[in-house]
Image 1 (tube, rainbow, N blue to C red):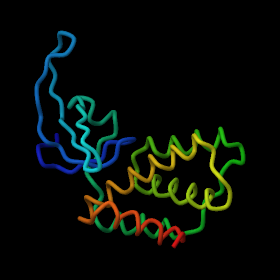
Image 2 (cartoon, rainbow, N blue to C red):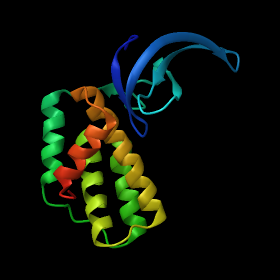
Image 3 (spheres, rainbow, N blue to C red):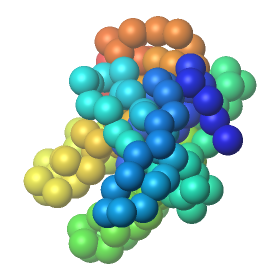
Image 4 (cartoon, rainbow, N blue to C red):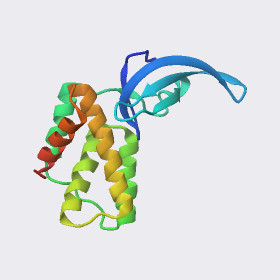
Length: 160
């Protein structure tokens, strides 16, 4: 169980802090909830404590893992399906995993693809979400600003 002040990653939302644990009665049932705060927004998310493992919550990666993710951003792009629908589905599954390495792979591949040719609106939104997830984890793991994290990503992908 996590506690107030812990830095965690909530797949599809990104990294943030647990502000506290509260017990609430919702639909007649008492449950404990993590109050999760995202550093990039003013949004608080309530996460049921008993669903912690099923939703994939994990601690923020350490510096070694974040460094590996930055190295992955520098590597050659993975081969992706030419059908945008299948490619979108594959990338979405990678994001849902909550694995920083898979998120970095999605960011790298879509940023480079966008440089070569324009992404569909769905893929553009997916890229923005993936970047936000990666940036938020880098911010907390490396104790840097959002702008610094975005610059590291752009340089590693080769867009600077």
